[in-house]
Length: 115
Image (cartoon, rainbow, N blue to C red; front, side, top):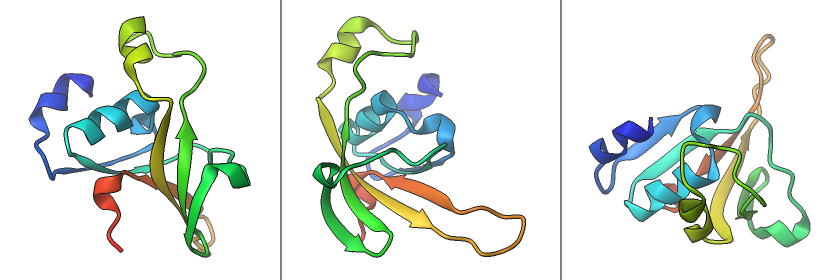
């Protein structure tokens, strides 16, 4: 997917699954003014300290702390160190009551905070 970064223009919105929800990609898209709506493999654990604001019952503005070390060999240590220590994201929990379906947590980049 990183080979396709250049195809995204300002104000585009990336709609992706859990494979796209990582620290480097979220920051890169933010820097390019590309919005993103992504599902999480698992909800990121957060504490009261991580929550900036409760926007609704299952709608939170959160701080995502930079992981301590890179687990992705696709970029350099220098690129990793250049990333900010935290990202501000909107996390929405979508509850689905249909049997056989499951609820999802979504992360929205700041470009997608339509409120």
